Amino acid sequence: MFRRLVRTSPAGSRFLPRAATVGCVGTLACAGACSTGSDNEADALSEGAAKTLFAVSPPEWFEAYFMTLAVSPDGGRAMFRERLVDLASGREVPVGGALEAVFQGTFDGAGLPVVRGRGPDGESAWFRIGDPGASAEPLGHVVGRWPTWSRSGELIASVVPGGDDDLRIRIGPSDGSAEPTFHPLPGPPAAVAWATGDSSLLVLVREEDGLGSLYALDAGTGSTRAIAHELDIPSFGAQIGVPDDGRVVYLPLASEGIPDPVTRHEPDADRDLDIYEVDLTSASVRPVVRTPAEEMTPVVAGGDLHWASIETRSEVVIVPVDGGEARVVESDVQGPTWRPDGRAIGVTTGDWRLADWALNLDAGVVEIDAEGRPTSDVTPIVTGYHEDFSPAWSPDGTWIAYHSHRSDAPVAGYEAEGSTDDVFLRRPDAPTSEETRLTDFGWEMGTPDWAPDGRRLLVDSWDRENRPGSRGASTWIVELDPETGAYEGRSDVPIPDEAPGIPVWGAWSPTREEIAHTYAVPGSTEVELWVLTPDGATARRVVGFTGNRLGGVDWTADGDALVYPAIVDGRQQLFRIPRTGGEPRQLTDDAASLFHPQVSPDGRWIAATRILHTKRILRRPAP
Image 1 (spheres, rainbow, N blue to C red):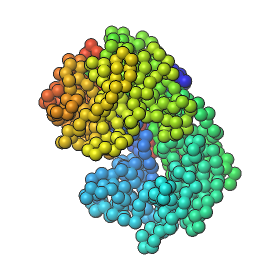
Image 2 (cartoon, helix red, strand yellow; image 1 turned 180 degrees about the horizontal axis):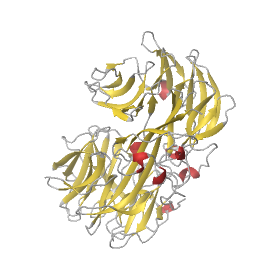
Image 3 (cartoon, one colour; image 1 turned 180 degrees about the vertical axis):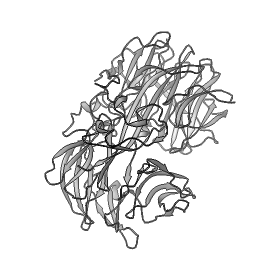
Image 4 (tube, rainbow, N blue to C red; image 1 turned 120 degrees about the vertical axis):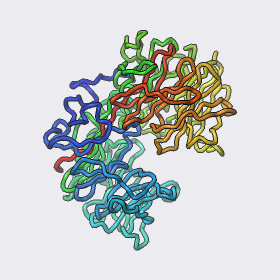
């Protein structure tokens, strides 16, 4: 299952070599937004001239891949997830409307931005944004997912819940003047778009085998007609681009054929998304944009094909504990953990590719010397079907615990039947077949952290049991026998009443009976770091900051200070603060974002994930 990931190089990289990137996005220094380039600068990016209209490098982890792209009918503006962009200048435009938050957006039939956001009353809804400075107009008749206006602008369709957990298409007048009609869908929808007229919609459906089928749905009768089957669609980022002639559509696909189920789980399989043309008559498929990056969300507007592209560079680096320059330990990996002897770092291999979300993640180990320099390639330690994260060694090194979605056989999707979602345990030198499923009560279990006594593991999880007072997530202490690894029980760490949102990331103190924990509101960048006792009897807020909620936290080796990442000037950097609070000290000023700090056992180094996402909006004439 495990293959050594290729390093970044012009010949074999999963990512574009820097010489082939466009304008300012080809350097690590582009932490904000920038406009770039002439029409012929991006020839290396696609089959035909392409132009980068907008680029941004957000301080996000895997969340950077969750994105949508909508372009106004005249091709002048775009909604890039929550960002409103003027495509002529390549600059971001404030959305306005006095909304507390904006999550995503599209355009109505008149080309005005429509966003899903949180209004002054705290409720989430769809709003139309007019002139700058004007109030956002609530659109009570726009509900559900993926609202899309017909070509004439007179009809609007969206996906809404139906009975028995099914989803339906809701179609009604765009002004809300009459009651909508509802039609069943031919399967779980991955994307919806209007065809060239107002009489039918195109629906991309996700099948149980992870492949997609494209249907035409009659807007009046709800009858459906199959167009194409066995499309290699992504787990996320599916979208249907519809040109004016109505002969073809554009889809993001990982290949022209049917993927081998085992290949979906291989860390270095060539499975990035490209833009394909699907003939609506013959169902033939051919690539029209093919690059080493992830190409997705095609939109046809103003006679041009627009799409979004993501290029990601991820590395595990080490930084002196007192601050300084980051030094690369290994490329194309993330999520470092230290072996107790300080001579090896555990890593997660594979990237967050959209075609096989998380199925391809495995865990490996890099041996290092006393100065943190690698002395080996990545060697496997946890492999198998579905997601495996970096190992956490017990204090005496006799056990490793790790988060996994282990499945016994290849699966086609993240939540496919046969997948798990728990913490597993085994001896470091034992085969994966001897692993023990330590928990069976979690949902999106976090990375485990060992207590110094080697008998307890700290784990965060969404609360599958939805217990009163849990806020939907919990911090668990899992007790086990250190000799046999047998599960002996669990308890939970109470959430401080004043802490915001939900527990996100925890770490045991190496010297005291204390836990450091971050808390955050989902969808927010405001994070608070607290120190508390395991029973919750004492808890104190250490610091609040703006950051990625899954950025991580760790203790210094003496237990007197904490290391955490916070956003500065559009990038996430490492900070250090005394456990009792005080003034944080910035440790890094890196051109990329740093996540998941882990202090070495000897206290000299901080290992971290360094990530640079470059997200672009590109345009070329429609083929």
